[in-house]
Amino acid sequence: MFVSYTVKNHQFKETSKGRGIISYEIADTHGNKRTVSAIAQLGMRNKIKSVRPIHKRELPLIQALLKSSVNDKIEVDFTEYNEQNPREGSSKDIGVREKEIPDDFKDHTIHDIDEIGHNKFRLFQLAALSALVLAALMSLKHSFF
Image 1 (spheres, rainbow, N blue to C red):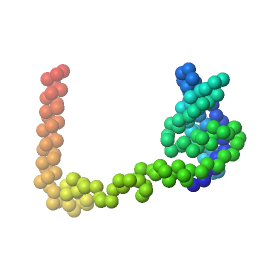
Image 2 (cartoon, rainbow, N blue to C red):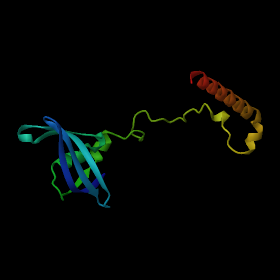
Image 3 (cartoon, rainbow, N blue to C red):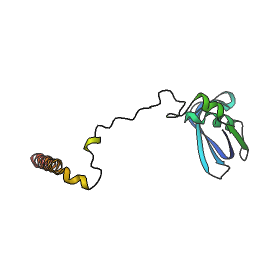
Image 4 (tube, helix red, strand yellow):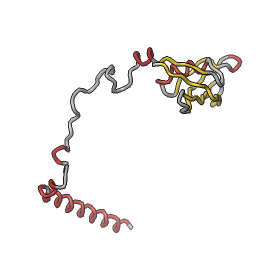
């Protein structure tokens, strides 16, 4: 997957000696702007020695941005990275669930208004329990204050 961007701005903020955060403001071909950041390690003469993206899926983008300047147009190929690092939940992801997740409350869910008549006793129990809990909380409040 190829994506094109234009570098609008970049800045470096030193957070400690020899380290900092580099941020790039970029725009895609549709004009959508976003900011991409990475943690940078400085080397000799305060040149960037290495970077680690804040979000690991942005690694190919950060690598391309390091070689760019403001107003440069860059094209990033995410294909190889996506093949090696599939998104969670994708079909390539190991351990994808094929079975439905069990719903312990499925039998106790009211799906339409007609079911309320069939569940009057259960609703009455819930209302009574709620009233008892409320009364208990009120008595605890009055005993402490």
